[in-house]
Image (tube, rainbow, N blue to C red; front, top):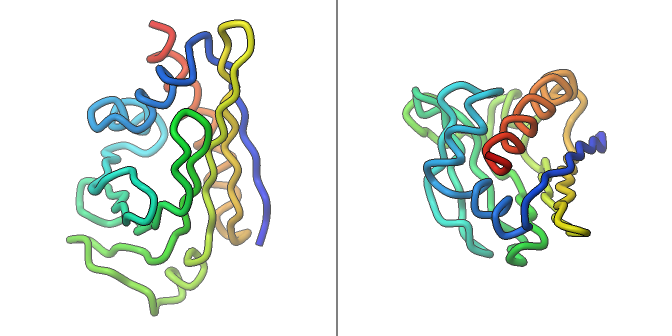
Amino acid sequence: MKNLSYNISIAASPQKVWDTMIGQETYKIWTDAAWPGSDFKGEWKQGENLHFVGQDGSGTLATVNTFDRYNKIVLLHIAMLKPGSVVDTESEWAKKWIGSVEEYAFSAKDGITELTVNMKIYEDWEAMFNESWPIALARLKQICED
């Protein structure tokens, strides 16, 4: 697996960045910049499963491993979702995603929140994330600072 890291400085409190990042309506806005039609179903709570889906219900299923409010979120991806939110753990596509880890770390200094997104993924996904994460984070920054 490959480790990727993306970082952005946002002129807002960690609470503002956190709430904007995981809020049901604001999540759709910032993720849409890189992954059109993105949404989630479920609760951002430790031990809960979240469905990250596009308009057709395809996407990924993740467990919230860590939920340390305003500090850190860690997600473990446990399945892919086929259209209609059908769980897939057997396809080659799913096997190259299951076990991926997504971590969000928040730190604050002088009114600026540093948000770091760390991904532990299979190499097949690297180009897509290298292209999309900077776009999504720039949109998140814009929303938080407006």
